[in-house]
Each structure stands twice: as structure tokens, then as C-alpha cells.
Image (cartoon, rainbow, N blue to C red):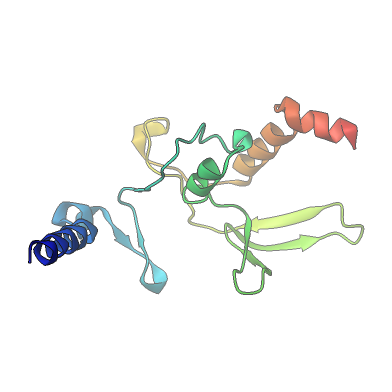
Length: 153
């Protein structure tokens, strides 16, 4: 009898621990509805068992950091999970030159950075082509590891 009662208590405790906290009215007020039943804003909560080393995309070397930054950053294009074809994300469309050396991306309008104190009045501004150029310059010229790989090729 005691074994059955102990098992019952353990099962109830496990089910209670797995219960979702739901969204409070304060959290719901932060969210902005988007197309397709998604909501923007709020707080990102991740349950990882390991520490990540950095959130700077050019220095990610471990799986935990990679899983975290994929929830934060978006690229010009992304993969369709079903067939791994390429789809636009921040790019509206793109063209590739005949020689395959020049890629021209048209950036989607209305994409903004998150609000942060680094922006005037703390309001995130619209993403521009200069932001992507800055990131590509950082990746190609300010990272000694990437320069080393380029020189080895």
C-alpha cells in the first residue's frame, strides 16, 4: 500500500512540475501579433544544460551557443526544413550574376532592430544594406581565424 501511495505521489509531483506556467497578462501585453499565428516581442527563455561561451555569431564554436543564436539572429536567407531548399528570410529576393561571383539581395522593408539603449531614444531602427555590409566586413576582415582560412585556400 505504501509503495502504491509513494508511486502516486511521485507521478503527481512530476505532472505538477511539467505544468506550463502560461502567459501572464503583463507578458501578453508585450507581444505583438504577426502573420501566421506568431507573436513578436516578449522574453526569450531557453532551457539549456550547458553554458554558452558567447553570443557573438563569429565566435560561436559550440552547439549550445549555436542553438541560442539561431533563436536571436536571422539571416538573409534560410533553409526550408522539408527539402533544404533556400527561402528568403530578411531578403525579399536575390539575384546571382552569370559568373556566380556577385549576389544582389533586396532587403525586406519594415525589418527593425529590437529596442535598445544603443539606438537614439532607445527605439530600434530599420535594418539597411549598410548593416549587412558591416557584418560581412567583420566576418571577412576583422576575424583572424577567417583570414587564416582564406589565406590557406
